[in-house]
Image 1 (cartoon, helix red, strand yellow):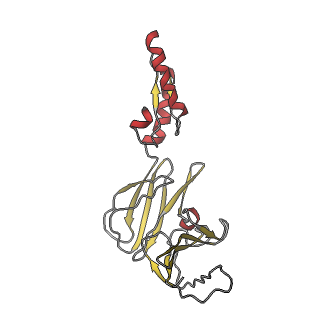
Image 2 (cartoon, helix red, strand yellow):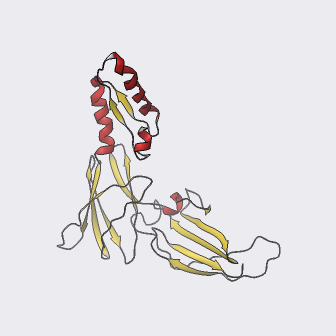
Image 3 (tube, rainbow, N blue to C red):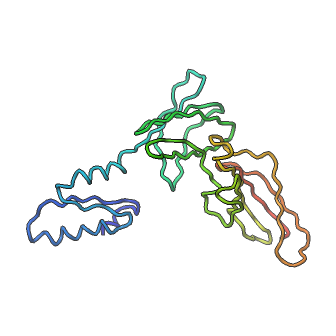
Length: 231
């Protein structure tokens, strides 16, 4: 009943105050919250501080961002909340190309400068290690779900094939290539000048095929759409 009334990511916290004997059975049924996914907490009143601390981890964001233009009298662009690990939070305003200072306020502070060029789409990971915060570009090609990937997590580059299917007699593919932020452009989007794709049919002695490709925008890594009309 509880799970049906709330989104699946909600975890429940229940304080079990003393009740009469006739209500104890009903109250005990709420202990199911500790077995749900994500697991909740069912505590007596003397453990309410434990419950409050647990709730605070989800209700009070530990970090808040402020983005400020560098070398300008312009006012900060406002506060942003940190996104979760499995969803992307984008600044919905329009940022002019240039340098910006990202300030993170929370349990541990952080100040870092980032540079944006026209059409950049920059996704950053905030990493905490024993109370110390660091900022690093999100390695999109390593994290995104894909049909196939080339390169390994320790390599400097990875390619992720996000689409691979035939449609109306043509092969359509979509791929991204992204540099490891630990080795390439830690705080700037990956930029690739020229790229060459070699697409070969797996059938024996295939006939030559033409492949057309074009760069695609709107992704936090260089992306290309590929099409082979005579596949």
